[in-house]
Length: 110
Image (cartoon, rainbow, N blue to C red):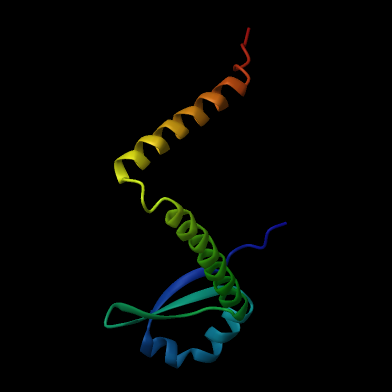
């Protein structure tokens, strides 16, 4: 079963400072995440160490994904944009056609 996400609350920096100990306890128990505002502008967030670890992991995965995209882009750097767009459109249309051909027709109801 998936763990429920903590609620996110927004508060002024002065309020966060006054209630810092209670906030830390709530964040640790994964009851809340806090967006801290100064003059109505979000300036910081208080999140659990577990949330930060997950964010770091997601950022690393994103960097890897973009590195792969950069490699792919380099393989086609000499191909004009118009030609690439035509080939991509053709490949997408072909993939959609193949997908439609393999899908079951919807069941008829009496």
